[in-house]
Image 1: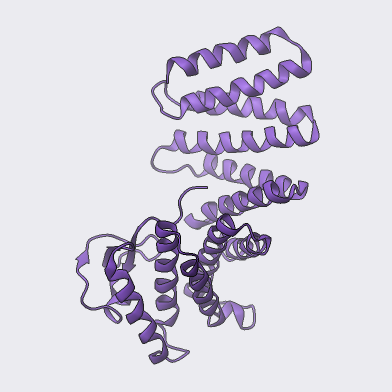
Image 2: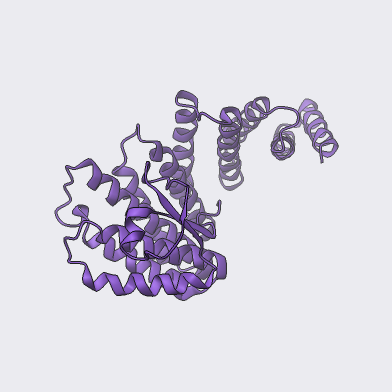
Length: 303
């Protein structure tokens, strides 16, 4: 899984001004709240502790219906989560999850299940998604199965609240697939792997119909490669040759999308070679082992 919490945190200016007016401005944009001036600081910096103390002091002053309360809770929880990723203090991720839970108790989604306002939908989905991230981080640290179960539930709800044409929908679908894969590795539940494969298929399909503006071929190749890996894994667990054959075709397709000097090409070559080797072991056709050898030789040349 990619690092979800880089050490530097970027927060909307209007939120931080009411909490920490002394910090310097930086010109950046928060991915979830466009067109807002932002502040940026390193969560490993000593100022982070002071900032969190100020944030915690502000919370009791905000009435339950204050329009900024959810944003403040998210700022605190995201800062704690990123500091956990940077420093590994388990108390930080524990507190982050608590604050995220509080943000959901004031979200319209937790009251009667109905949300009509688009901003409310966005806020609820964002809180659920960030909570899923935090629970996944704690699971990776402690391996508590309750955390991975809760992360899956939160990612599901975040995905359900995201419209298919929203740019975050694809990302949330991929996160759900990733955490299902984690649970499969932990408990070996076949249904988790099946669902992860289906979600990854949908991600590939979305990438083909609505490609990214930047690095289109590389992004699609990476998603194809992930799908191939999941299919190959299911083959090793079930022995269904159709999964291995599809994985081989997908790896070949992904490889064709990458330029000769792409740094991701050697990894794709190795995956395709391994898949061809497995097919040779199953079918005994010499062209498959020849293909595996050729791909490995090319991968070695590019190291």
